[in-house]
Image 1 (cartoon, rainbow, N blue to C red):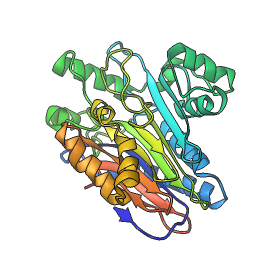
Image 2 (cartoon, rainbow, N blue to C red):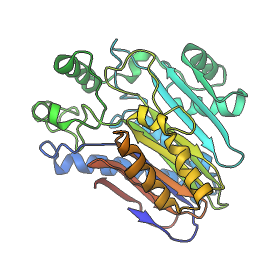
Image 3 (cartoon, rainbow, N blue to C red):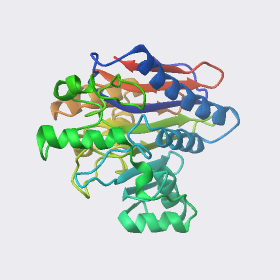
Length: 339
């Protein structure tokens, strides 16, 4: 899925990447994911059409992704090994390179709003843990009790993960070979007996958005609940500026999803921008180099969405599927799950 039209306000989103559990996918389940992606894209598209900045558009999109229990961010986030939730998020404005991030927050309803508060009000880039929660609360970000993030499906994932592998870590959209048979017999959503199109037990559960507004300004935002059964205090690429999120008007905006440690090691999001600036690669070639070559050499799996200041959009991934889509102002949204 790629577009190279002249600049026009555009937004692209992702909801995680991984191995498709074809044995458990149904038409109804696929429609649920496609509908959620489409509705979120329409909200971002509408904001851009009304003159919103790229920064505001990605904030709208990721807030909605965090509120949707289909995705591993905000409500519906996965559990740590201690059956708790620790959430991460980051946001970056390509105009002036302003950035903010939070990690291991436990009470912020929408971590992306906490990340934006850090960017706009703190003078810092990254805040973590209880200090980040307290800072967000002081700046009017909605707070919730930890139980707000919990769902029976995510708790079931944790229990299955521990039963299958003890201290093993599982990514939220991957690993159908481990759990596909069990998924076929387990309700993923209330009232439905089928599994998610991308295996919910071990998929790369990160959400994100990138946008280019009418002025050619770009922005990116990324949010996650992390890994099922992750160690308390573990932080992946999502809140690391340059790894899971990056934006610069001189190159592009990038939001990543995948094996976080690999994305950190190669500073994946920034590397796309660097390849454009230092080697004069196109957005498409730079993104493909990072996703299909550099990450693969490290055993890294996942993908990203990216947009440049001319409104070109790319959504590459090296897994069997990635929840994704983009929408230009004045055009119908395009969404997809499979390769």
